[in-house]
Image 1 (cartoon, one colour):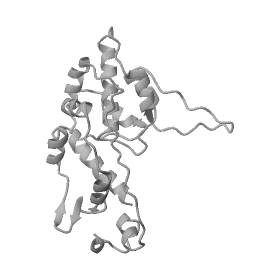
Image 2 (cartoon, helix red, strand yellow):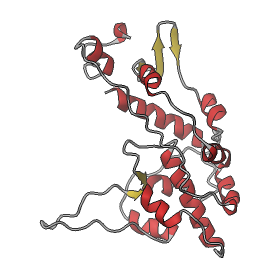
Image 3 (cartoon, one colour):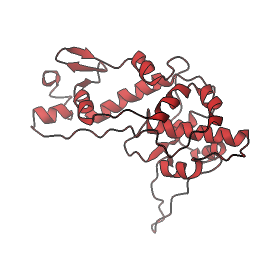
Image 4 (cartoon, one colour):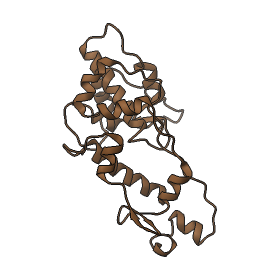
Length: 233
């Protein structure tokens, strides 16, 4: 990998630190947090999850997620080149393709691109309209400033309020619980973020309409590429 490094552009690359500065870096932290057994899967969710195209994936990860070897994953990431979206190995190049995503995760790769505005203005009102409740407002400090909180909800808040769908729930309530269940699952797996504590609002927003027919596999691959780059520099 050393022969691929550019002394100008790659001074922040992990391999540059190891090869040129002789630093010993620890393996990266795995971001996938698993679907968790806290959120109960209700069969009444099935028809709504099927409309999104996520049903095979949800069924896959709800059973269990594979154990990941942090050292092996780190070794691969250290050989990633963002210019070509591929791993440069001594034996040649290797990459993760859209077909790989489809075969391994069962995510749909056909459909509309998952492109949305990242503007979070009014997200609390929109969230309440979708799921019927909101996380608590951040407290105001002595200086008049509110605590900074992520745009979304914590996994603990979601589990505390949506772990079990009421037996006597009507169709509207079941839809809310199904939507939150999918939001929880994809935020902990394919779109996992570094803290492992929060479900970002934008993934709930993507589930506003169940039958949008998004290409979730394409979004997952693009997100993977982006996160690998973030790990390198």
